Image (cartoon, rainbow, N blue to C red; front, top):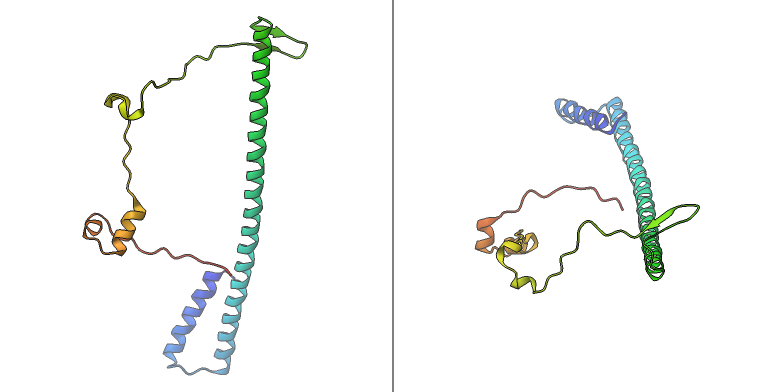
Length: 166
């Protein structure tokens, strides 16, 4: 039985209790106990599954971090090796070389980097981009402090419910 089905049965049972004006027969008492125990068993199961999934998530994140570091190390190695090939070909006065396992060639990138001669603040307006975004944490502080300006431009949304397992 699913948790929502157990909760629905408990709700229906509470309706029966209200109809019986709170009087419990022995059979009703047993049924009530069964429903409560089923729900608690289901809660235990859900908690166990959540803990297991959280442990797996932590392990996966550690693996992602490990792989990210390994990728960065490989990228640095590749860049270094290519720089060594570039330097060596340049020293030999060559733009390309061939070996039994592959060919290497010095190429010019299709685009060139733009190097600024002035500070960003000194650029003409048509060469700048201005990004505007709300400072939500500042607005939140203003709302907590009942700042009229903050209250004019924003309000707190409904609190989100969440489950925390200890």
